[in-house]
Length: 228
Image (cartoon, rainbow, N blue to C red; front, side, top):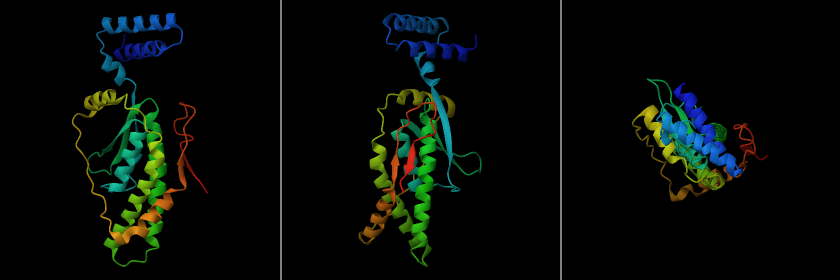
């Protein structure tokens, strides 16, 4: 029997072992343990079989800015995923979310929607500044985006799950990607005169709220809503 099919069968047995029927649960657990012994399959192999991936575009940035990276990490933490930046050769990178079951798809979808909203709000704010100094214009736009993130973090924090799948994700990442290097970006430095910029960024994020999905099969529906 194909190893992947065996792991899938073990996984199904383990799910049945959580049944409210004690006899059914015990029988399913015994069957799972017997299969694992027979085919020399370890528990981490079974956990890794639940891991899925989903990706989201970086919006055209070759080196994503701090606020984009921070948003990806915030979303990944909320839905118990890992967020990585994946770049192949000289192509523009993508944000890759890795998690259990549909959590990766939910993370990628939520990131995409919030990223578009943040990027659009930042662009509109920068267009209204009327500054000739492009570096200062970019700095203020980044301070605005960081304030937006600060505000949305409170909303996202309500979704943060207990990290019960950390080891399974660690095993999967190590097996499929080997050693991972950190991608670090520094936040824009804010000054005391940036008070109004920070307020604008936080106000812009007040229209965003997250909704819990009630159906695991519709992982990309009902997650993000923007109020009028």
